[in-house]
Amino acid sequence: MAARLDDAVLPLTNVVFLLLIFFMLAGRLATPSPLGVNPPHSTSPTPADQQGIEISLAADGRVALDDQPIQKDALENAVRQRLQRQPNTPVRLRADAGLPTSRVVKLMDVLRAAGAHRLRLVTQSTQG
Image (tube, rainbow, N blue to C red; front, side, top):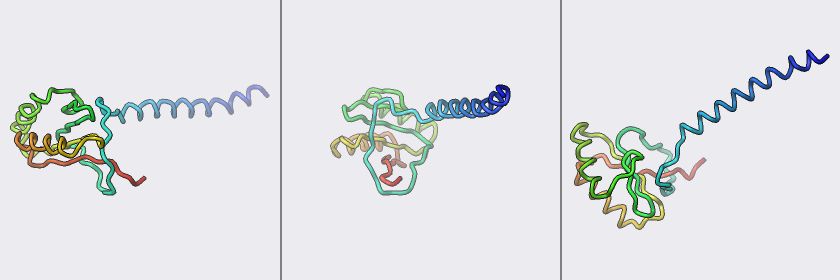
């Protein structure tokens, strides 16, 4: 009788371990922004394009270029160099919802001066 109980538990154990591995990998794929940026909400059902350059602007003013912290003074030059190597690359701006609009617009002006003609503001969906 004990052998039959063990035979029934083994497949269940395998499924539990497979689920554990799946959730460990899924958790690594969805890494949060290193600056803790919380974008504003939007009712737009269109998902953000994941291609191109991503700029993050935190509520405390810190800036990151593709999840790597960078000084504000160096941002324009770094973006300009990347756009010179790959023209027409889309640039996504992930700004914290708590920021004043004037600070976001000021950074958008810096990015446009660097040559970002395909500039998008990233939002998070209120649907779901």
